[in-house]
Image (spheres, rainbow, N blue to C red):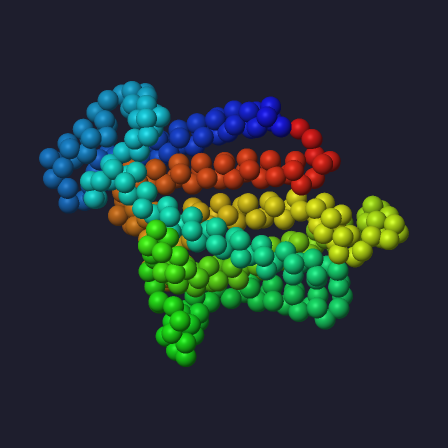
Length: 314
């Protein structure tokens, strides 16, 4: 296991290197003057010179790349062209809302979707199965922002006024205010993830329930709950874990629509604001951060494979 982890980490280094090269060339190889692209059409010559100096655009491109990588390795992602703040200081406060919503959404989705998928597979072809699949189709079909506005109307405006409409409170301010502001975004995002995970769990369980070892377990007199959970679900968990991990990475990297609906200061909104403002250093940092999240989550997924399915060996 340790050897496999080391190999996977070493394999991730070239991937991040290619991403870093792409991010670096994103601005430098764009047609025209990069400083003029960043500054806009109404920039003065003094502003253009300041941008060229701050980004080192007057140097040869290989020196620019070496300097940029050296700063990255020291944790320096650069400075925003719009706010003139270090990018790390801009990303830091936005990580907690994104991670909090992602964790809460995935936990709630797993707690609801996995039992639904198992029951739907166990009762295949019955009204229970059809109800679960109908709910899954509904979860896929309704847009996220519609679900969000419906939940706001019902639970924050009328008839119930149980939670605030929008905003975010850090868990350091107390669990009560934190929970009140995170429950609606969590439920909104959970609709589609419950649908996705439940369908995947059902499909994977149906494949496993027809295997010989499941029939053997039943022939030995093992209870149905033990057969479903110990023998079937564990062997059916690999594709389910893949969906859960990919969804978690997507949630952390930012869900722009939900963050906009609930006014959450997350990573997704930071990325959109940087794109609209043509703040290239922030865009570059967000691409690197998102890529690192996906590489890290994929590593955790591969480790989970070996823990859940003893047939998988590396």
